[in-house]
Image 1 (cartoon, rainbow, N blue to C red):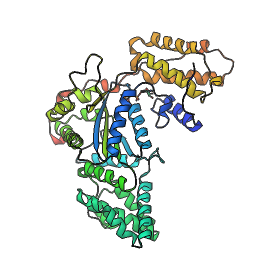
Image 2: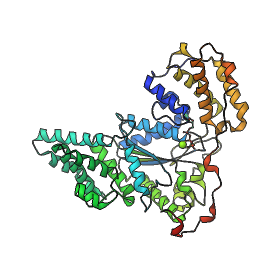
Image 3: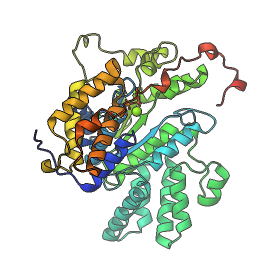
Length: 438
Ligand SMILES: Nc1ncnc2c1ncn2[C@@H]1O[C@H](COP(=O)(O)OP(=O)(O)OP(=O)(O)O)[C@@H](O)[C@H]1O
Ligand SMILES: [Mg+2]
């Protein structure tokens, strides 16, 4: 079986194999192993184009445990980077939420900013280089026009001051420039810390930078809007925010805390439906429970339920990728087969003569999995992939050994969704703050 694919860089090969063997989703090089999702990627490509043109958009990527949500989010993220967007991404957790009063929203924001990525820095930590780029362009423009750099910076940032929090944001960027200009590294690093929401008190921020505010829980969304505008001033086309593990909101036992988060999501959805958050897009990854559960999911919030209701015509195998909810079906056995072909190819770094197993081994491995797992096959994507890569690793390190001899020894445990444990509904409606970590 042959494959006409793009050349495989050794670094990418190693990174992809390493993360798959560890049971995690690769952050780069996903395209080498991607199967299916062509229509879904097309739909998101249209979103990315709209965001780059100054529009907005939000999508809920919904799929069962192991359906490939995280993989898909990473894939879209890498497409966005190629299209000159800046991306930020983070997983929600009990300590990281969209709305909070105890620092959890600031903490989510800080995590997003740490993971800020650009095409040149796809692995994250790219915020300083984005600011640097903005400042560099402003300095060049100032030199050309024979005016002070700070004047150009202020003028370019003036548009931000229309937005909530924009004055201080602009001030902090100006401080960064001052630090840059005078070789004051403390000042530049404090400015970056402020933009990453790493100041936890106003007093500290005032002492370090002379601004009166910090990015706190309440500023979560406003600051994403500011950042989306700012990156366009630095020459990028917009900002894509990827939030995974949204099921953590569904798991919040406290109704008030949960609804606060859903209200924040409603603001985001409304803004993107109206196109009023310029150059900004959101991707939310979550399980069907997170969306559909009428007691705790997004559907428990009527305004969201009506906006996110699925197209009732898209049933029985028909799809509609234009709505805000994008359903990811589980990968099929056929998808896995193609995936094995791609993994073998990647493992051999694209050199067919270096394939470690013949096609029969792929079929035999599929049969082995089906026998071991039965219907649990589709629920165990990670172990199916890991098992196959382990088999290849053994064959590579023990040349001359026969694959059939090893095949029988590949263990594939059933992967169980840790979120499947039944939720305790007894807290619902109990808004006693004493019982809740806000
Ligand atoms: N389209 C795809 N092409 C190739 N491999 C994929 C694809 N989608 C998912 N995978 C692989 O399948 C495994 C499971 O995918 P992933 O972790 O993205 O699922 P998930 O829906 O995020 O799961 P969870 O509910 O646990 O968060 C991963 O090893 C991933 O690399
Ligand atoms: Mg995931």
